[in-house]
Figure 1 (cartoon, helix red, strand yellow):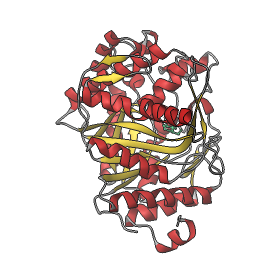
Figure 2 (figure 1 turned 180 degrees about the vertical axis):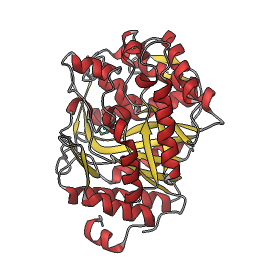
Figure 3 (figure 1 turned 90 degrees about the horizontal axis):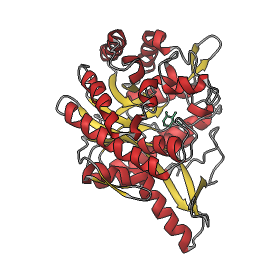
Figure 4 (figure 1 turned 120 degrees about the vertical axis):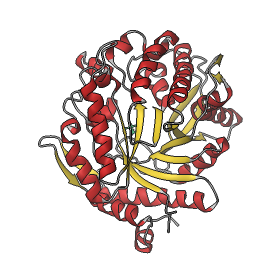
Length: 413
Ligand code: IFM
């Protein structure tokens, strides 16, 4: 099963999840208050980045998606930390020197605490701070693909609708205002960065099925699918965002590529509670991962089909599994790649695949328990130990091909 020569195989991480000691970030602030697990040194990547890039190169991964931490670059309002910016430039340079294509994400869930305390993306007037940050990002050299936001709807839903993540709010109107401001923030970034980089967004695709074949549940599925998967994307292209309750006028802009993150399948049920009209839960179609998620490889193909409506190059910017059963990880990778291959064969414009994650890391409100990594981290010693899946994925990435033996053993038929 051969992939095109230009297809990018890589791995993904994000700054807060691996760097350690991001003391100026809002997640750190809330962890200190006891509302979140502490990230502490995480994988100590901020100090061990050279070794990590070396390991990545030795495993044969040709691309790497990572994020920069706004709070490191601007630890205080108006105060640029040049040395942090230079460190990110050094990381990009090292990746290029080792033949690894860097893909950069500008916002991956965390904020500088000072910005969060001003109301973050709840307030349109705060976008002036975002603009300053983007002007600094524009100085980076040696990157082609830049994503403005990672999984904006996950950010909105987790932080403003179900209240599990900072700032722990549960309010439909606030949530949709944040989504609208993120669309505006994307537009600001697109305007400043276009031409220099290929500028896209990374959107989580959630595969939803109805909890039953009743009309109520089928309609609920369509509505949730629209609100979660497509409304924000449409907002970017159309200048009008349909929120949970209201329509918002937003700044129309563009995307040079679309990053799609895909993990699992969920079912949607209509509830009788008008304040909480939809029940969304695990679809229960497979053994559960350590995140409590069901695996459904065909969903990645459905996601690609869905996002192809925007007629932009697609990259699978995340796909992965939290498990200690590394054989299952290999099966997961092979089966999802089979469906990506099918999409490419059918003519869909898919250009890359990034496994989440290069190494075990801080999984947000779940702390360090879930293990998504190709590389295991011993959090006591911070030793990196590649799992078997790390080598197998390296072989796939180097050859841009899944061997018959792998398909025979792990593939779906
Ligand atoms: O760890 C996260 C990542 O930060 C965003 N996408 C999903 C991953 C697994 O939950």
